[in-house]
Length: 405
Image (cartoon, rainbow, N blue to C red; front, side):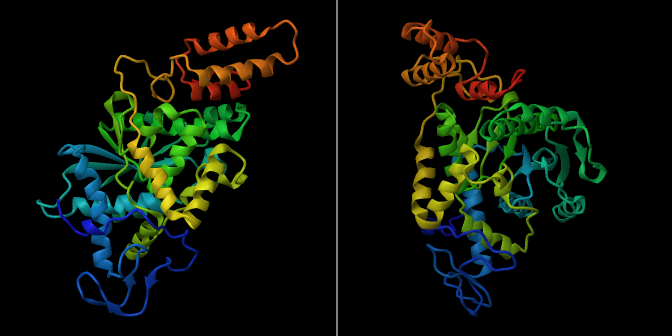
């Protein structure tokens, strides 16, 4: 493994989102000498915790983080079949560019894996116009010889098409849209949509015989995901939600997050250095156009964004805390049939209190139910053998009619 900039790795600092038609904060346009290679450059990159450096030195530093995340854990076998999930955001384009660069190196430095790319078209579910097909085709040409596929969220894995043969379908998402409309709260809709997307990606990986999936989550995404998981009652599986390796997917498919150590400023600098053009902002995927307080996910995202702006090191602390959480591992314990997390079947005071409160709310001022009756009803709900974890059971409770699956 190379040793570029190992002593300069840090957690602090991340720039705000890049303004339209402007340069990322910290790029020095005046000529100067790179602090690393001492070569004179017309454009220097100044990260918050590093000295100013030229484009080549910055790219080497950022790409080293990507390789180090995979190399340190030794979790990607040689010649593994990899599926890269492209969503058109800046983060996913950076991951695509880094993987393509790693595949085009000489034999010694090359990342030995076979990669395919899938774009999950979810704009119809979100109620927005789809991404221009020409932009996706340009990406497939730019990053040849990767095979590019497109599948619509809510469609069957068998409907996946190569990018050159893709034609949008008007009816593929009707069933998913219908079920989303039955969910009363935006919190439940976003949680359900996220789990459906993960399950679809797993099915696509199995169809393409890929054993590993690359997602483009960076440190601020994982900090948000950690707090969101706890708020939604997924604390038991929160460690896997932010870890480098998530092995909950069916069919022995493993989910990897190789950009987990990068921050927003590094992503924006990389986009500028490589002249990449994101198809849309990542933050708009899960419905944040409804407002910051419309759902738990939106509120948590706004809270973390505020921390990022005013106390950047605190976001890093939240993210690093998630790294230190150890998930309970019991191969004999059953998994949730929806999210694949370990079932929280043990009776806990917290879950009992939640179900007791729900029973009291439903009973109202009824004089026919005593405290013991309500507690028995709460225990009965917890012992319900529906195959769902607590968080997915909460989504089920939000349905006006029908079943979650």
